Length: 266
Ligand code: 13P
Image (cartoon, helix red, strand yellow):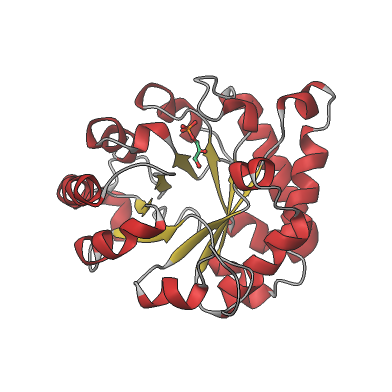
């Protein structure tokens, strides 16, 4: 999907003047039973069917089979929260891209800070997963973001630059239309502390610059960069108004239609 793809043509008139298509994704993390997931997916399909942005839900692996038929053919994409770095084999507890494909998953979130920090995934491992996901035709949402101590030490940009560069190492220009970056400052996740729109935009601008160095200015201009970290209905407008913010990756507020829909339809 091209950034600003609604700036031209028919959809501009439909978009109420905002003129930009955003990518709003819900990461459900390790929440919900199958019955709860089905209920939420159904509510979202109904509520977002006339929504003007691009949407995604990423339920747990065990919920994918439940959610898949409910979102199939709608404007809500189906995402997974992770995948194994290998196609198949003796990898107890892992889930393969082949298994995700079979369930109708279209997008895989990789490098989430909870994977990086709680489960010790490093850039090399994440890069391996990125390649595998791309090879099998998935869209990838590559998450990057600094810890609080890294921000306080003035290293936020350097961390995001490294995670972007290493995460994308070896990714071909022809695959870039399936790459999305999510900037999620770790200190803003689940804490109620949101980066100010200005701070978020400045890191997004840095990521876009890094991407431009790797792939050129035209590719950088098209890159979708989502912001994640305590996105709520009351801060989404100010965040999305920023030049370099092209969408949101929502955690806590994605768990209920009443909190996600206002974000998704801002
Ligand atoms: P919260 O919206 O709960 O801060 O989570 C953000 C996130 O980690 C999405 O991937």
